[in-house]
Length: 343
Image 1: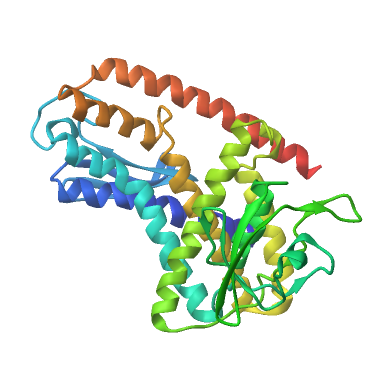
Image 2 (image 1 turned 90 degrees about the vertical axis):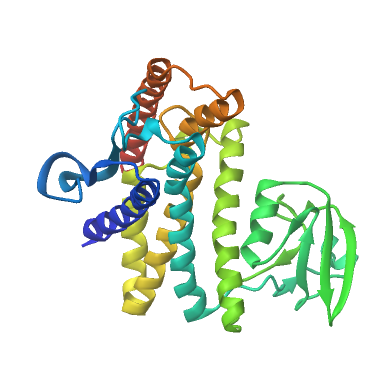
């Protein structure tokens, strides 16, 4: 059952990503040769409107194959025959649709159980936060230049900026206050401000609040993904800390087992939460300016828009091929680490 749920989540996220490419291709009158879910040999397929729709054997990945996508052909309907801005919209649509999917799923969660308001549940006595005047019930508004919308952003900020002095802005009984606070070591040797939040404490608001905080939910996961990547590039975490499909399936399995006792509704909510994370993560990862990814293709298209001349498709194709091979090697390493962690 756990594997089935994981496959359904992966399939939905990938299908929506490819749907973005597909719809913008159709809008720009680009011929879509094949729209498929999965990889490998076809299990089922049918043709309609000049496009073959396929379900393939391996339930990973998917594709939206467009006519002349990696060629310089000017054949009518080909990807290359369209304007550079049309091609940019087609390529960018995949990641953008991942963010849209994450937003739609967030609407259900925030509409059902509310959002985690950034309100302090406790302030440790004698801590830097207490000395600055913070109290339980205060609402955190900003930490340095970062605006705080949900309580998890407070925890994230302290995790991604350990030991950093923060200009904290908060609201106390309707009054706006601020102070420069430097974290200090507690009895356990951990550097802390001395504040505590509970992301399980939820607030339900108006319909507008639901829309607004659903957008903040997506923003939270996008920022979390970007900050995690920064830590990877800075060497603060290693490649061994990354998780691939095997690791994600393991997380889904553990979450499912832990949620079963709470009932089907909470299983559904937890699966949606994981789906939001994965969808936002896929959107960010695909926008990275790396060969073979949508972000890498966008780099070439933006350069073309600036130069007003297309880069040699053969050279671009070679760059993407090398990038794809590198990504395959990375995937193998990450999957090996995932399997190793299981034992």
